[in-house]
Image 1 (cartoon, rainbow, N blue to C red):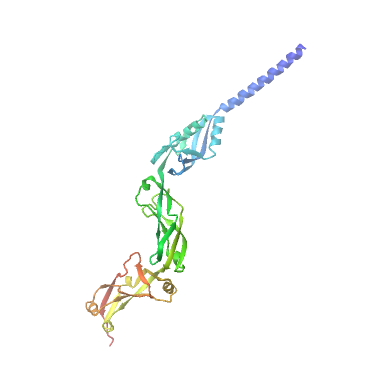
Image 2 (image 1 turned 90 degrees about the vertical axis):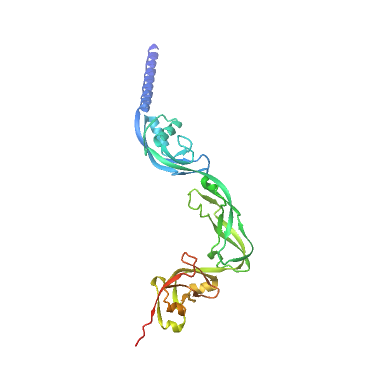
Amino acid sequence: MADMETRRERITNLVTVTLVTVLIWIWAAGETREEITSFSDLRFTGQTKDSVRISPEELTSVSFQVRGPRREVDAVASRFREALEVPIGTLGVPSAPGEHEIDLLALGQAFLDADEIAVTVLAADPQTARITIESLERRRVPVVVDLPDGVQTTNAVDVVPAEVELLLPTTLADLPGLSVTALVDDADVADLAPGRRHELEVVLVLPERIDGQSDAIRMTPRKARVGLDLVSTDASIVVPSIPVQVSGPPADLDQYEVTIDPASVFLRDVTLRGPKAAIDDVANGRANVIAFIHLTSDDLANRIQETRISMWRLPRGVEVARIGEKPDTSPTISIRIEDRVRQP
């Protein structure tokens, strides 16, 4: 009986020693110091939604070289598989508007310390990065309607919504007199019947003084409904080129040869506006448009070298709105006047 108890104690002691040895080996393996390089994406965020714009908002594939116990190093690799959210104002990242240089090595160490992962960040690549922070504000501004020239309406023109919300950098939010435009273009009214009420869905356009100033600008909503009682509407067309011809007293023109400067023989990109039917005739080639310089007897005798467009051949009700980018519809034309050579 005593021998059996002694044998049982020996077996128990052996198992205990073996378990302790295995546990010590596992603990020692976990405490072995290792170095690895792990990659992660960093995503910078504001403390509240739409409070700031951060550029760049994300840094991709930043590498961190870390050293520590194996189990902690494994925890780093697992944690870095997902993008790291970095709220500004934490982990050493400033929250004030402006441009800032971020020490990514210090940021990585602060992030792992906050997660209670006991490793040392030895290096980061890149070691630093620059970010720009813009403070944003919300502001409500009125909507104004812009109708094409020639559109006539009765009563008031309605727009819904009457105001929209802009998300703006603080530097732009205090600009006086801001508004957005419900832009009704020629195509929107081209086929509308006069004498009736019409509802149009149109895009909203930012004012030029802030458009393109910041990628952070947001407008809600982006469209509006415009209601109008249409009396009449004109259409417009841009004619790529219109010929210039010479007119004057026939008897005098028989004595002189007038040559128009080659650069002025055609007027380019002429905008015509008028009744839709007449504009359609121009578009379909059923009506020709010609510009004229008219020379008097004195002009010919004095051999003037330039004059202005003074007449147009246009369909009834059509007018010249602009030539190219200029509103001047009577441009100066260079000419040369010579005696006409008589054939013997």
